Image 1 (tube, one colour):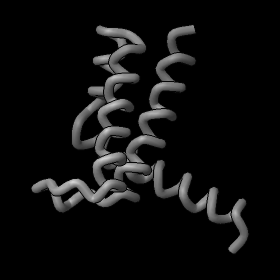
Image 2 (cartoon, helix red, strand yellow):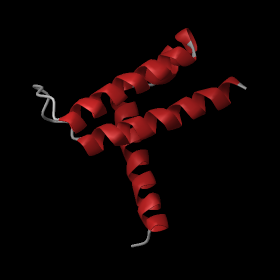
Image 3 (cartoon, helix red, strand yellow):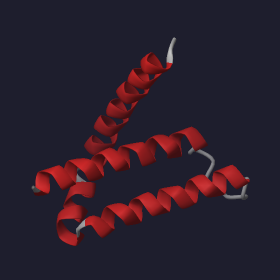
Image 4 (cartoon, helix red, strand yellow):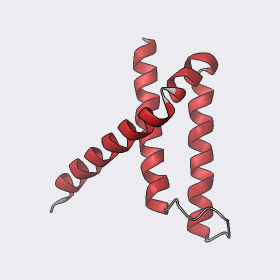
Length: 90
């Protein structure tokens, strides 16, 4: 599988994760964005980056059900969701 195919596969995975989480949480990202603006998206992304940094450093924590790959996927989805909200704002 070449990198373009891998990219497409990852994007399909991101779409499925987005669908599942949006079903579970509703449009909480969008609602918060509409209330608080771009800073709400940046805050979620910064929190996720802090989680990624902790996982990369091997910092001990009690959360064991979120892998580095899971966190990176979440960050990618937050980026896409941020773009959606910015486009909807136009």
